[in-house]
Image (cartoon, rainbow, N blue to C red; front, side):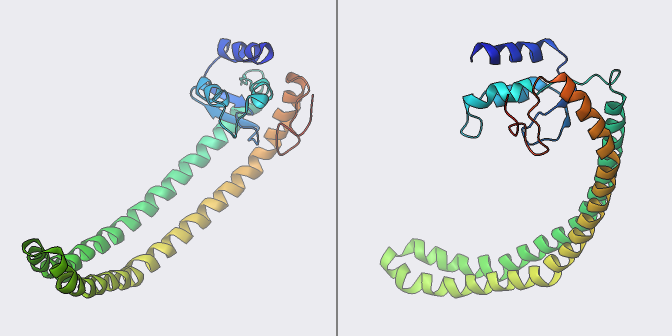
Length: 220
């Protein structure tokens, strides 16, 4: 780690480690919550191919803890995000509650099918295989097991197509549509607050590189 990167590391380590932070990821969001920012810092310094050492200083110099007392918009963003996430959780829980009995019923029927048309018929053949040499099994056993297995798998697929996937897809599509509406409304509320925060960040971060898409958009 070079001196400039070490200085940024020390600055972040000396500050609060939880709360709202700027540019934890190089493509945004501008503001993001972290329960332990040093975990993110460690990830930045890991030198994976997607996080080369040449980017470490730029990444760290954009990470600042944002004081909600100094920047009231931070507290407003958090309130909106918490409300949005709570609504999404309610939708997800309702979706999972609807999907679970469908999935359970499907899996129960699959088990019955496997037991009835698979295992019960395959087991004697398998036992016969154990008692015979491999060549005999290759000639007489596998040839009998395969059509039984294929028939079982075909029935399983039909069952899922008929009483599982169709209903789950409708529920999933409805859930995702509701989440999108919530997300769009949340983004519309948060955007002016993020713009306000960004003005502050440009004054806080020397030569802030953010160009609306990435912190690497503008060079020092």
